[in-house]
Image 1 (cartoon, rainbow, N blue to C red):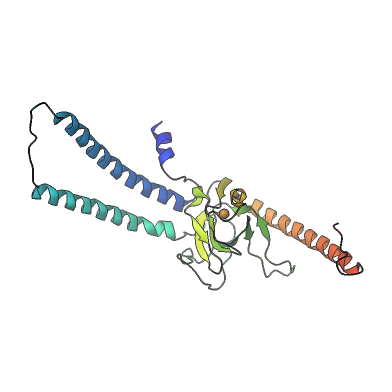
Image 2: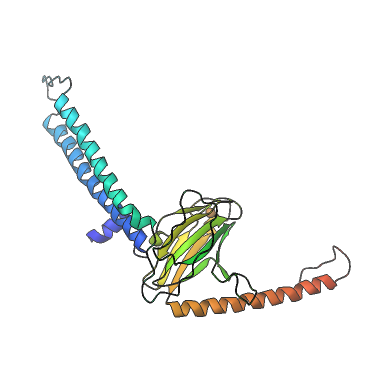
Length: 277
Ligand SMILES: [Cu+2]
């Protein structure tokens, strides 16, 4: 009961270690705030009853209390300092991706450097992660997976809306936009990151349990914004490889069909006479 009530007030987590760290940091701050809230409101309610106006009574006229004022200023400063220390102590485990776990997919090293906005690209200690390129556009998320230079000539395999990832594998995201500013956010997998045209923003997650993690573009980007959902489906590494291979097959098929259609269009006579198929 307490746990579910608390969950209502705290961030979603459980999908990735960074999301869990954010959640525990939030709970620490919430606990400190709750204690202060009870003390302040308790004092207020006590004073309301204890010192309520009575007929003919004149309240004590107090003009400052140096000791009290100094102590609540110092007390507040100490609480702030404590929260700052805890935050910085946890920041590393939120920002820095760890290595993949045993049983994770064979990690693919990510390529060269690019422009970055607020957050820098961070790699796990061993330098290996599965790097997925996230592109926001009105009004769909597109994901490019490693494999751009494979001999099949298909380029990087991609998917829309649903990102499929292997479990136990550190996944780094390279987030950008092809039109307006969007915001990538799957709450159970960590914080929000903006997709800004011309810039790259970096984050990561590592999903341990297979499952579906839901998100949504978190920055209003136009009339189709509400439909711009994002889903991350985590599956065991072998299943991920099979999915990726199938995705390539589908892309090859679609490319072949497009080629036939293009040829057909090219063979039609006269400009402007192209009919709808
Ligand atoms: Cu949007």
